Length: 577
Image (cartoon, rainbow, N blue to C red; front, side, top):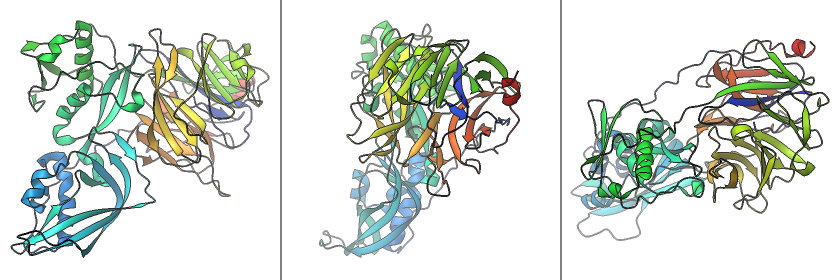
């Protein structure tokens, strides 16, 4: 329900509210003028992008540039399927023995440039000659050995050097950095997105910790990451069990006859029954992409623990989300094609933000003061001691989150209890311009503008055993380096959609969507100036909705690649009743 609007809008605002299952919703609310429309569009299925590659080894008498190009052509297959069998043919024996392709990855866009230059060092003994091939490319992302993705500044050219030697008339790469270099076009064909499910510190939610693992052995890597350390940006907000004594007993997690087998070392027997149940459950959901409908066998020191999590009820279900509008002083539900008047909130035609659910909500007044709302729309007083705020959004179980006027402090209110949160990792000149809370309530996406950083970051949310917010993560992970982001929303538990504020006289805007953290994809917007965005259920489908500066609401669903369309919401007529 994050809201940041570049221009003054008229009287209506749109908010998103949840029907709670195991988690609660969070999306950006959308400011709406009095008149508007909402799209109805059938969802589209996202197509798989996996294509197997079959590279060839080096040809006889190939030139140095051709050797390096061939190595680049072979690296994707190494990640995906052949374990670098072909890629190593372009290396000398010594280089092949020492090179670790799985330690990291550079993801690039466009076409790399290959140039040779002289090697000022003398050729090693036994080599006829030596030179260096430099590859210049535009890096768009970096992947570490744990599969954690970070964006790179694509405006800067990156140079990667390879030393080659010639022996017996053939050029081979003799020196190179560990890791692979993969084009953005190949990335999702050779790396698989895997959610390593963490358990929130409260013990009440599962948190998808997104990793990108090689297709050829992703299950093995995934289990190792479940057993590994929590990433820094989630530290202090999720359960951090002592699992250092546990590892895979064999170097693979095989799939045979639709059954997955995980053999762990004897350390698993030392866990308490509760810790063991959570571990098995995390493995089950991680290998099942959040689902449990498959056969999993987990053993430790010969003991079968496959049913250890039979009583664990934590799941990765997504909430049902309703969309509400404040227009002409009336709260209107837009969850279907037949809008329904829910309550009256008179006197807020110039409101800047709106959050609402079946339990009530809040209005951000034109002067920045946040006033709480009862379930019937009646006002129940000023929030946050009447201090001015620049944006409000919804969190878990009826929470109201707010960003202060300076963009330096966050506030959260639940059941009339208010908490002030100071992000310690915020740079001295950085300001938060927009915030979105993830569906399970354990992550925050923040648009930040400043001298030290300009883009989107994500941090964890700490909750106590009663699910009350008691702090933020100790660090952040960078989601995007897109500048001047002014609006963002979680489309679902994995995908974040965000857009910049209008730029220059043409009101130019950029919008992107991405699994976070992960590579971004361009999100096409309608050919209008977008003032705000949100996501929620309309006519039974999850939809991304955007508001333009003229008061029209459009939405798109499914893969978000469909056509934006408009349907009369009847909000104006309903508000006049």
